[in-house]
Length: 101
Image (cartoon, rainbow, N blue to C red; front, side, top):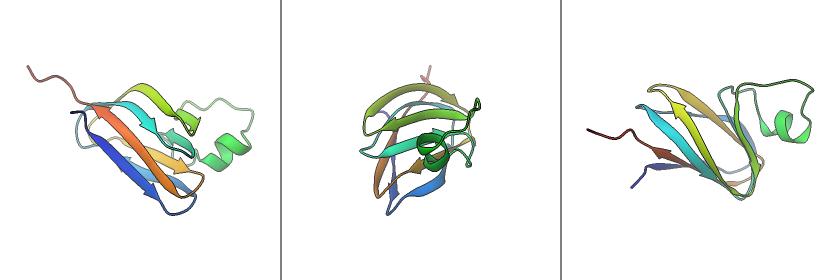
């Protein structure tokens, strides 16, 4: 079974840090809310979804609203991703681990 992590929000919140403890791949995410997953805590729902600036942001991994999104984003041990959500609810992150040989 692939590991998953539920990141809970009691209200809208910006940049909740999730640090991985081993090399893995962020394989997907699901929520019923608007969500931003990024490498930068400053990339939030407020400044990415509702009023984006006319810039390119290489730190954004995913932006979605109430769907199950598939990803294939490699992460190294001790690397952090930041999860922002526009309201109370749960954001579920799904990971895959490297094969053991």
